[in-house]
Length: 233
Image (cartoon, rainbow, N blue to C red; front, side, top):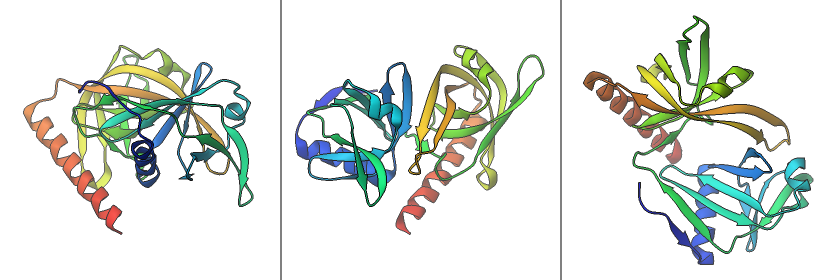
């Protein structure tokens, strides 16, 4: 992971925003004690548009944003969002920030999967209760999981899920222990203004054998090639 640095030029900031629009990157917005998942819909010469959120529209202070990219996380603060209507659709308009902090440069390439695939993982807790969660993203270092309608996962931070089967359909399957680094509650607003609440579990792969590591490499390469193929379409 590289040291953090700051981008202040408007051209560089707009370039970051354009990439976020192009890739459909998730944008986390912190409001009070919660994190709301959103995305940048489009830009103009002075700012950008995100889906409507009543909670963000009522926020009176500066908003904190974090763009989740493949190999970095970009964080910045802006003035409060303005409620606007574009082509009959309610949305929020946010002015460009004066600077953007590149706060995390990932050691491993991270592939975001949830917006294109419905990959699942399966396992059992120590008490025998079975679970299955959606795979949100994956890298050589670990993965993130999406958990809905299961409040019990809020206490999993710092624990290890044993012998978890990660199912990538035709691409392959992988079995590994997952150490849960942290658990975050996320509220996501779609373009149609509907909200979805879920837990985001950040997990690290543990005790992987050489054969399992080779299988992980093979799965990531196949997913990466498929993503590049879809981009060309």
